[in-house]
Length: 351
Image (cartoon, rainbow, N blue to C red; front, side, top):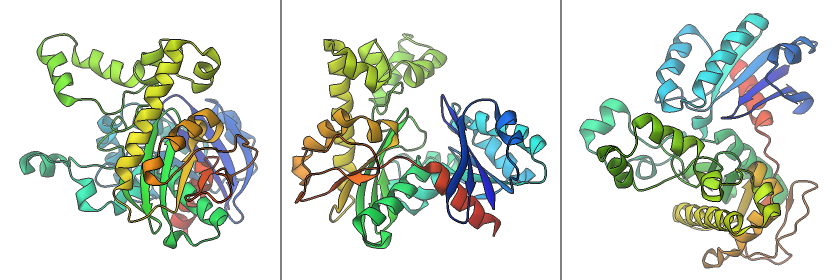
């Protein structure tokens, strides 16, 4: 079974053709030219569409029927940077590949195991229940892969492991995994909550946002644009949203932006660690987590209170334990392989 995985991010599109039986990637591309990629494939049985926000109703991979498409439309306003892209790609690929089975894979599915205490916002019931105001969590396919891959490297079943996982990329979030299941995560109702990101602010004081609106400093549109596109590493540095650029730049502004970023990631990891009774490993994944050793070192090196230490290997040739031998808590760096989890989940949904 050949599965085409379609992974739209806020500023990227990644396509992979995966043979589901042995999880082998047969072809891949980062391109907006979906047609040329699909046309050069011999056979595509299933298309796995990553859906960032499934809303309250889409909680597992499911075929993109008309009723499912209606539920995706309902979730559009919850992740306006992402969901409309998935809808457009569903339309395009349904026309290109009418004989394939199209499976929608919500990123929020992995976090359906969040306990109620981690899911619930302290808001009035008259708000929470009618509007489904709760914490959903995101980057689920990355966390799912990281859990499975970490178990392989640690030679333990996923169901025995308690992990702290940091997915650091354009969007950043952390997750506490207990016995293979998500029990806490930093993102909530939308992909804006939690850790500082490359262009997104992450969590800020809601009272400050109310003040900006009430005092007429910003319109709603200006506020949304600033929080999603002009904050984070880019907003603080004024130079770039790319950690590689900031590390090589070395200016005071670049160093400060990185220091705040690392501080905020450490704070989120420490907070989610409170949901675990022990930590078996700290896992870095995502583009930054995998390929920016300076960030991994700064984050791990500042978590001594959790028993985690620095002195990490800078080598990133393959997935590996990067902490020194004898470390109290191992630290791993894993390349994010969302395409493999998407293909596996879609194949299971079809079967």
